[in-house]
Length: 202
Image (spheres, rainbow, N blue to C red):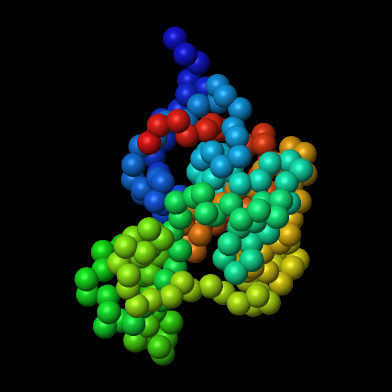
């Protein structure tokens, strides 16, 4: 019988890895093979006030890599890698143009007092097919995110981050739902000792 330490059945408990992993779905991880760059991996994280929890994100940086996010685009060792990934981003819509949109209302918001603009987390391919009147919402460089500042002591935000170099024994992970993910931008570089497994079935 296979050692249960090496194969685990888990359930998605947040939105951060959509569209690859939908909230509430079951998926299988394994420790049998070594994770590779851009695999989805599960790991133990400490998130106050929850304490220890299991998160699943994409392994974007391995030891020796340099990562930087510029205007919402991820560069690994100077190369744009987002073109190869299925991602969700936050898009801005005029509220009156949203009646035909299919979206999760838990991932949509307004910024008072400008309630005529709706910010929605959507898959890029869906938005392209719509050919809708919208634009991707990207935070400007220099606008400091306080959570990120506490971790890295830099005036970075989710869309303008780094560069950071990944040291030995650590990984840099990101959620595919870039505007709705607490990942290495907020939690820091992940210790490899916290690794649970690589997603092999979903």
